[in-house]
Image 1 (tube, rainbow, N blue to C red):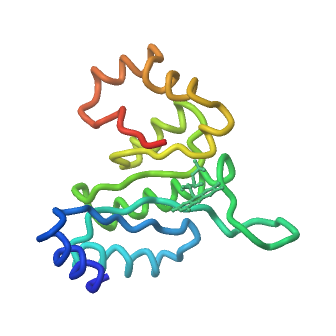
Image 2 (cartoon, rainbow, N blue to C red):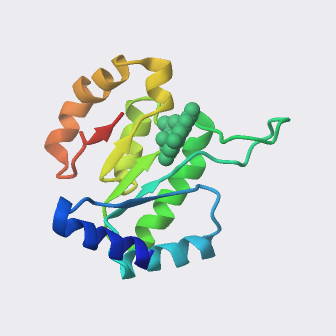
Length: 154
Ligand SMILES: Cc1cc2nc3c(=O)[nH]c(=O)nc-3n(C[C@H](O)[C@H](O)[C@H](O)COP(=O)(O)O)c2cc1C
């Protein structure tokens, strides 16, 4: 990670500063997560994306990563552990199994600053974004929280 940081700073002088976030697996052990978090903070990386797909599945091919609904639990557990390790200030983009308003809000409540939606967008299309932004309960949440509820990436 230190060489990534060195290269980032070197390029910043000619091209401007471009944030670098590391995207992690939901299959990491707690020890691996601890080591990674420490290194991200030490090397001043700009944030973490939590998480990529899981390879913990029973598909006969044993290949590829699983996304969507079954990924929600492992990716959110990883998010909770990660937030506890890195503290409140490091930006975390949450990803994994966000299929509706409830799962979106849960990621925010568990410490995400921004939420990425991938599989949910494939199944639900743009109406999912409408649900997240425009539902009555979400408008109420706006008044009740200072956390940025409406940051998401498709
Ligand atoms: C078909 C497919 C291709 C993907 N390709 C990439 C990729 O190239 N790079 C990457 O960082 N993540 C990739 N991902 C992971 C997604 O960006 C996302 O983090 C993951 O699927 C979990 O979110 P979801 O449950 O909303 O899909 C891919 C996921 C899928 C399903």
